[in-house]
Length: 261
Picture 1 (cartoon, rainbow, N blue to C red):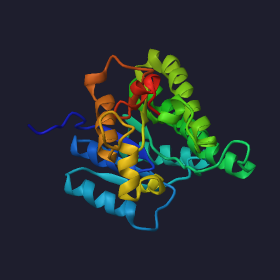
Picture 2 (cartoon, rainbow, N blue to C red):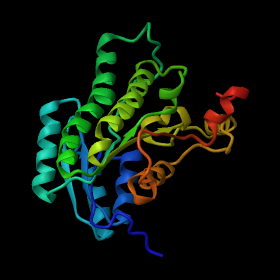
Picture 3 (spheres, rainbow, N blue to C red):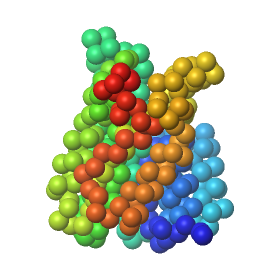
Picture 4 (spheres, rainbow, N blue to C red):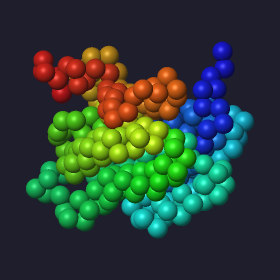
């Protein structure tokens, strides 16, 4: 049976040029949503490729170049979306950066600022601007992207883990504040996902096998695994869920007390 659970919805997905963001955008379009593709990089053609895929699925899309760390960019993006579609039903905050291999003691101030600005501040700015629209609508659904290392520390995660932990509290606080207006706010906490974002971790088959052995389900996540969870949170099936942090890690967190990492 054709899945059109998001039929007529407007979904704004940041970081939608590749990886999880792209998978979420295509999944939502397949479910009937019109999509706003937002990303800081526009000139490599990847956003246009995603837009073409969405058109094949029979849905409309808008491509917007945005630096989520800049309030003016975020507010302009939000204004453009409302002008084009008249509403924003769903916001998925996938934009993020990671500078791997740095301990907190070694992390330069510039790197700290950039990671916190894009991941945490950027998520906040998008939630704030779009949340105001949703409050006026008295309906809406926000899905933030945290991480396994937002729930517990990870070797080499550095400032990234701090930013993702902040997103968890941001999600819970917003869920409390926006619930009276019919706006739900939840977050996903993926484990290692096979994207270009962290290709250095899994690009060799030996690395994949080694990492997969630490995951109870025996494999690393694909972007589509995260997109399916986001689709669940975006639909009416999850209408009584807000303020939740959903681990998508193949059982990694569950295994941690008995020695898993």
